[in-house]
Image 1: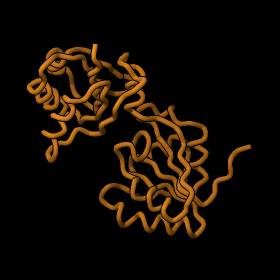
Image 2: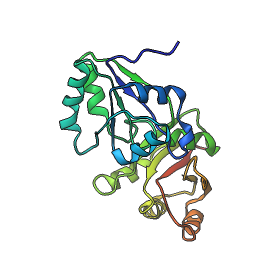
Image 3: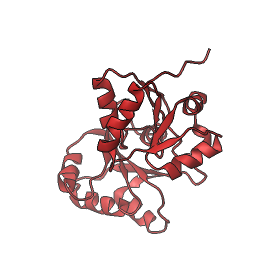
Amino acid sequence: MAEEVKPALYIVPTPIGNMDDMTFRAIRILKSVNVIACEDTRVTGKLLFYYKINTPMISYHEHNEAQKTDFLVNEIFSGKSVALVSDAGTPLISDPGFPLVRKCREEGIDVIALPGASAFVTAISASGFPSHQFKFLGFVPNTKGRKKFMEALLQETGTLVMYESPNRVKRFLKDLNKMKEEDFKICLARELTKKFEEYIFDTIENIQTRLNDLTLKGEFVIIVDMNKK
C-alpha cells in the first residue's frame, strides 16, 4: 500500500545526470504534493516533463531562502504538502534547504527524507579508495577561507571528498601541489552517471598534465587518499 502524502516537507533527491535514476517513490511524491520548491524551475521543469509530473513549482535557492522559508512553512500549516528538490542530487548536501528544514523542525512539522542520488557517495563507492570512513568537505572555497581550507586539508588523514567547479579544478590542483610535502593519489570523477562518465586516478602532477588535453565540463568530485600506508 502506497504511503499517504500528508501536510509535511518532503526531501526528494533527483538524478545527478542520468534521468532514469529517479526512484518510484520520488516520482510518486512529486506527483502527489501540492508544490515543489526547487533551485531553478527551468532545470526541475525538464525532470518533471520527462516524468509527466504537473505539480506547480516555486523557486527556492540561496538568494531567496530567507523570504521563502516562512512562506513554505505557512503553506504546510495551511494543510499543503511541499517537496524540496535541488538541481541535482540530494537537497541540503552542498545545496539550499537547511533554513527550511530547521524551521520545520522548530515548528513541529514533519520532515520526510527520501533516499537517492548523491554525487560524492556515487564517486567514493567506485573510487577504490578506503570508504569505511571518510570526510566530506563540500565545495572548495573560492576566496574567503581558501588558504585556511587548503592548509587544514593537508593536516587531515583518511579519505577526503570535496566538490570543485570545472573552471577552478586546475587552480585547486596547482595550489595543492605547491603546498604538499609528500605525494599521494587522488581521484577526479566527472560527468557521473552520464554517457561520458570518467574517473581519473593518478598523482597530482600527472593529473594536471592530463587535464590539459580535456574539455572540462560539469562539477568535479575530488577524492584524496590521505590514508597512512
